[in-house]
Amino acid sequence: MEILTAAEMGAADRRTGELGVAVSHLMENAGGAVARFCLRQYGAARRVMVLCGKGNNGGDGMVAARVLAQAGISVEVLLLGGTDEVKGDAAAALARLRAAAPEVVVRELVDDSALAEVLSGGIGARSRSLQDENTKGQATASGGDLIVDAVVGTGFKPPLRGLPAAMLEFVANASMPVVAVDLPSGWDADSIDQKVEGAYRADAVVTFTSPKLAHVFGHLTDATFGPVVLAEIGTPTEAVVSKTGLHWAGAAKAIAQAPRDVNANKGKYGHVLVVGGSYGTAGAPSMASLAALRTGAGLVTAAVPKSVLSLVAGVASELMLAPLQEGTEGAVSLENLSGGGLLALIKQKRISVVAIGPGLSTKGEASEFVRELVAGVKLPMVIDADALNAFDGKAERLNGAGRVMVLTPHPGEMARLAGMTIAEVEKDRVGLARRFATEHKVTVVLKGWRTLVAHPNGRVAVNTTGNPAMAKGGSGDILTGICAAMLAQYAGAGEAEDVARAVEAAVFLHGLAGDFAAMKMDEHTVLATDTVAHLADAFRYRVQDNDGLTWICGLRPRPAGTGHEHGEIG
Image (cartoon, rainbow, N blue to C red; front, side, top):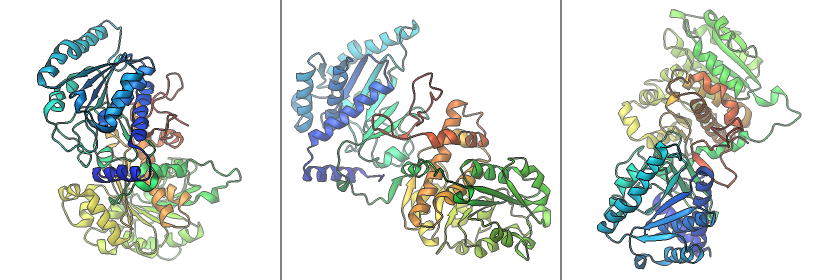
């Protein structure tokens, strides 16, 4: 699923018209999708206020108002301008609204005084009335009433002015939830900032055709898990052309949704070798190994120093073990790469993917051990933590040409690899990840807010799962195990597209499992291993709901009593 700029979305709309699809058809589908989302997500709402601008975003809102009214909802439209200022397809949508749902009141707000009068005597009073009802237990802020924001959308460039700007304070202070059509009004579609000033607040966002930059990089909703959903509205595939080189990582999850062959055996799903640990550090390789097992690898072996072997063994009875010789300060020794050591084990056990780094340390010979193992073993490899630090100042030795090499750095590790500061990394995350991936012919998983998956061909996937609860020690180790297991199962032939989808799906699943953990527990109490416990929820979850909406962000709800109230499964 391509990620578009505002200009590319505008061009897609123009090409759609050239291909014979009318804008009015797209508008009907867009407004209908917004209405269906409101009816399902806010089913208790009986009164809806639709704020409409004078352009096509307002036209989408008018279609939504008509569909909601026809569903038995009491609807009021506030038009920020006069009806004579509404032109083209938006004017046609307004005419259809008046003809099909004459009971819908359309209030024209032609200047600031008209707006002030309505806010003080109409909407403002209604909002206060609703708050009074809440105190009596007769309604709830999440279900009693609703605002639909259809003022301005993708084509708008900030800042808001005039009536839309005057409405900003009311929307900010209203007690009702707000569903934004396309984007929260005032938000620049091309922004890659997490938060912006001067835009309407939103509790949910419904956009169309393809996500724009703001939908994947911005945190558009007030709540951590506020929905951002996408509706297909009839735009022909050939009309959508993007030069951003960016796409949504969640689309790759489809590879993990096909049922396994009934004639399956463990040999079909790969053998992951986790190489890590040092004296006193058993948790990191344990978590990576457990995650690889839970993600579906056929076999998992942990190669760890002898001193922590018994501790790692306790993580799961299914885990196989290989002892490593220790050198200075309990770090792995170069001795493991000679004779009948680790290299012989890799060949004997038919290892398919090597994950190296969790808990390894950089003491003694550990870093040289990493560099020699990476150079000498051409199997698909996931390199994390101290295995990345082994290339501090030696990044030129990371060369993935002719092989599969996945790096999973956090910003600090990326800064060391690139020879820059963390601030410089964060200033241009996409550009840096893309340059490093293409120059070194590796896949870079740059962790952080909106983890990026940059591929050797310059393509970059943006991940939209994950939450602050995952800011705990061990999360990176678990991602390493998930990545290795997904590669073992879905990228055995080493085809670039298979590798890309396996890594993107791994990153998406990891964040999704963390989202389930945080929703069912609390973001303060979630441990890294809790994400492993929720991997089953992540695998069974489907990003598309029964209305055909794709959930880019947030977990779609299920009716109470199903056992999965915080995320629809299947």
